[in-house]
Length: 277
Ligand code: UTP
Image 1 (spheres, rainbow, N blue to C red):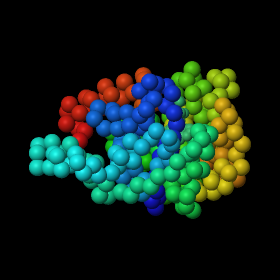
Image 2 (image 1 turned 180 degrees about the vertical axis):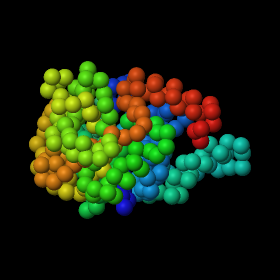
Image 3 (image 1 turned 45 degrees about the vertical axis):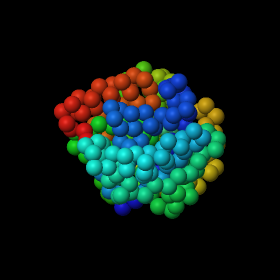
Image 4 (image 1 turned 90 degrees about the vertical axis):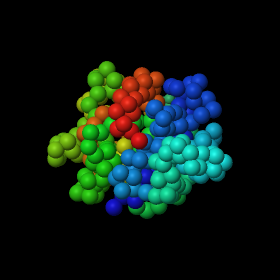
């Protein structure tokens, strides 16, 4: 039912400088795989095969990653090293990739609006690939697609965070609707601890209905002078309904050094056990 996944990947990644000075943060590897590839694989698991990526200056490596590398491939053809390219080849054979550029970094809401020509007038998923999710069973997007099938409205993934951490996130207030599902009444971008309506923080997974584009077109810059997706979603919830889903799994903020190192430890264990391909 959801056919397209948008990857806003134009941000500067300042928390990871100097590594991200000339390299997109989405290309940072957790063990041997770049963050964006984990995101694409999560989308594929949810049955989504059209990937739309919003890039910016200095992000060409993303396009090159999802393309054939003739010289390299002919070099290792027939050798034992060929197996290392098996997964990425499968992605290239199965998925389509389209790109657009966000020319000025005006915030996540603006980046999503830049993706409109690639997405069109249909519901779509959004993955911020610096949020890497580890799930025992179904991936977060698969979990969210199931909820979308039932309720057909925009959904944000949330997790409980420490109250001292709320000021880093969009935070929701909501009423319980179903198991781990809340109807959103309010959401505030990066609230101070005393203004936060709960400790349910929005993480980098969304399913959005396409009316969000019209709302984003007139959303004024908010916190930090950026066009915030949270502000647009708040308008959407006043007009209709937005759900928050407390997903099953663990999220690592790989845009921060701490989260990146934690994820590396966890995924390296999986790698050693042969659980990663
Ligand atoms: P972040 O808040 O992680 O910002 O954006 P950032 O600039 O990438 O990283 P820091 O904070 O400077 O270290 C969340 C997501 O939104 C995208 C980013 O690429 C990231 O996936 N984004 C953000 C855009 O695509 N464009 C923007 O203008 C802002």
